[in-house]
Length: 294
Image 1 (cartoon, one colour):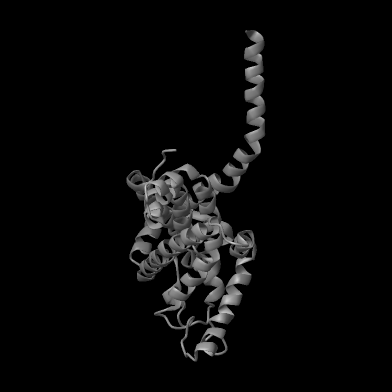
Image 2 (tube, rainbow, N blue to C red):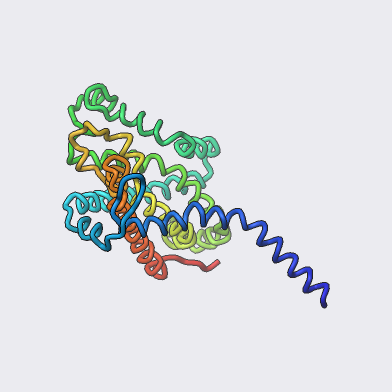
């Protein structure tokens, strides 16, 4: 009995040793910096990296700033533009890649390719494609549209690039979920005379819903904290800059350009709360459409 208890203690110790690097990294690189960010959001930035606690002044200034609400609106609009369309297209691609078509392994690699390319390179290529003067789209179609300079469509342009960049990765995740669906369910549906459309809505969609839920959460978080894509595609001299500024873009400007890290920290806390609220709503709503039955 004592030997068994000793083995159990030894196993627990070794288990703690194995997970210690991850836990330490999580505390040092994620949890502690976020705690500092919360403190900084209630503080005033001073020279030489010092801070002075001043209460909720940063939040009052933030909520009274029209630019902040504009950035919040842009972020939510970008999320609405990218998440539903992106997930729908990813699911269609996953279903096609899961079917018996020639060269589907090659197609899987092609769709996943954007994920292994540097985001900066992706943004620069699309920036050339959408260039209003010598871009391939305007040249081939004979158009004169300022895809990246017209304030009315620039966020839509960035949304197109975001959707294109993520389709492959999301499709691979959904493909894994599709391949876990038992073939016997489709065979039984065929015997009952169910059409392919009926099988999709009655079998495929319910069975892949857990994976779809994970992809939805990931994509919502990614869209709400978007920065690098818009930063690369819309430069500082662009007249449509203010109309594309998201919360993370505003944070970057206030923190690293204006040097007001207290106000910038308040923006980060607001973004985290926004992401948390959206995620909580999704977890509550999943009970109505996510099927965890095997």
